[in-house]
Length: 462
Picture 1 (tube, rainbow, N blue to C red):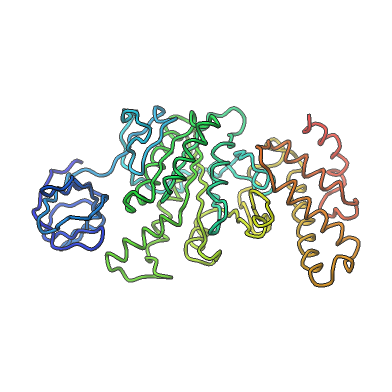
Picture 2: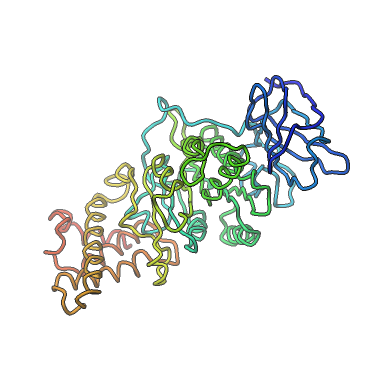
């Protein structure tokens, strides 16, 4: 229900991007606010705390020159809403849905609140079928399943954004299902934002994509809204129009740092490493908006990308994200240093829902055994590499030398790639690597799987 507008003259105080109002009535959490001051541009704000004594408003624009005592603060009675619809495909917007492509604002098919809510567990179906990303380390060994949340754990200087770009360009839905990608950037530099726009346009990916780009020069508070605008659009496309929607969010660390900035300004008691204690709940309101809903044709799948400070996987951001999501893809600094791109370390990576999207009728019957054997052989090779650093390669046993050679080839030929691969190409490369080992070394492959390999390899290579 729309509330009446109310105007208050003068705030009781301000801290950073926050304004504090006293003696307010009938205030709604999330309500839009307009802040006017003589000789100053009109500013936007949002109610983030509707207390009995004090209402807290976060200002979404630059606060330089704002005098709280002389400002006229108008509570509009409306909550943030997003224009949604198929019309937005091919468009780019800022973090609050304003066009960046010099085209008129979209009319859309509906106007929806951006707050949203996690999917009702009673109506959420188990994720099934895979989404092909075109990246062998994901499709073959950490398969992304429709309706899943699979984060990428990157590090400072690692190509997390580059991997995000590849996924946006290369992703496909199973079969001929209608598919869309929504990319939301948080805290991007102007150069990065321009790069993504040019890249997706040149690759022909824009026609099935929507971009929400919050830049570092934009008010940092917009980073808290950008993913919500994107997810509101994703939910409409998925559950009202029947599309399978992949939402790629980068960088979740910028989002969490903004949460800490706001919490500090509000003088909240800090939790681990200064982050607010409510960060887990806040992240859940984003990440739990993925899934498949009973009775609806579409789905929302998420790939959030985050930068681990100091490569620390126990840091609160990756730690809490890992609790909410179904696995993780970990980027390796060592692989990146050796020129393997994308540097996905498959050993600590995991897709907990992989088995729901592979096997007979979905990929190839031997997919699970094939992946298990690649994992086992590569693990042996990595262990042999550590041993060779101590005793030298000449001191290794013959099986360890074979495993070490396979590990080197696996990183260069399977993980490393510059072009998109379909699943058939990924499976064929994996089999070619396994065939370089004697049958006695392949203990994870059953005899029926090994015997069926030549015909399967021939079929997938055609």
